[in-house]
Image (cartoon, rainbow, N blue to C red; front, side):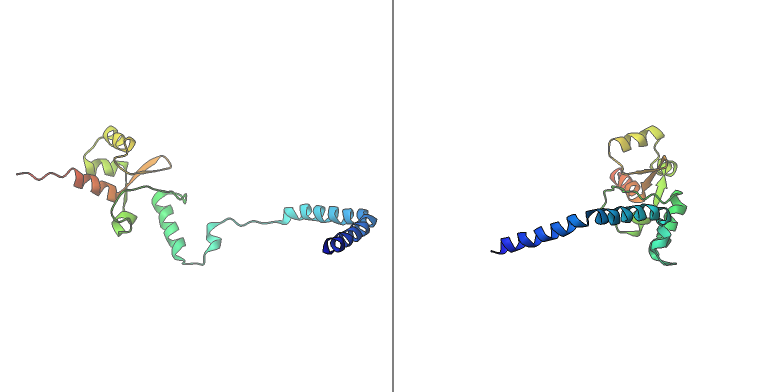
Length: 147
């Protein structure tokens, strides 16, 4: 019984819509045209600064990141250490030249360590950076006690 009532209501709705279909189509076309015309007035703010209030810790850290690496591209870095959240593992990164002098390795030796996965690193704008936790780990692994 209910299905017949539903079918009857939808049938009467369809008959009314068919009587005014050109008006409905015109209203729909005008709505689409108005939306397209309004697109030129649409302004999308994508600046990172607009999402945070002045002095927000996220903005401060982003500015530190920009000053250190020269851009604000965020990166994912895989490192292997016991605790990623020590100040030393989070804050201290060194470039390729500093890592070479600390480990007393040449360019090719350090490249081989990167390629074989023996040391974690990140490349930003073509420049290689190493977390100090990785430098420390290599130094501790290669430490030998004399006599």
